[in-house]
Image 1 (cartoon, rainbow, N blue to C red):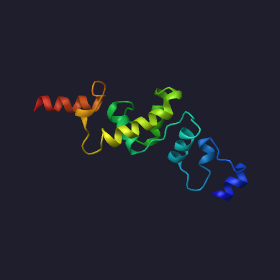
Image 2 (cartoon, rainbow, N blue to C red):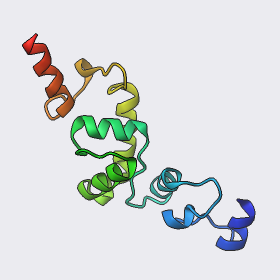
Image 3 (cartoon, rainbow, N blue to C red):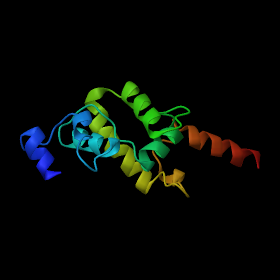
Length: 126
């Protein structure tokens, strides 16, 4: 990777996600993280937390893959907010909207959350 950075990119880390993906071991998610966090590019890295939380809240609709989720999120979140939204979704997924047992009673998004509305209806019916 160091040789490629030196030879092809003049010893500078490229800011463009497509160029970053040319580096060995750098995939789409890593390229988007680097472009977003370091260079504040309007891209969204979608990991398991972002994928799960964005679907539960309703920020994405029927996204079957991380790329589909990424496309929906980048279309619907203002570009200047994308680098922050990425971190908000990750942290929300780690600490509140957990995969196995979401802490809905501690969540500030229940009024707008699609997932919460579905589980609330289930509890009301039983």
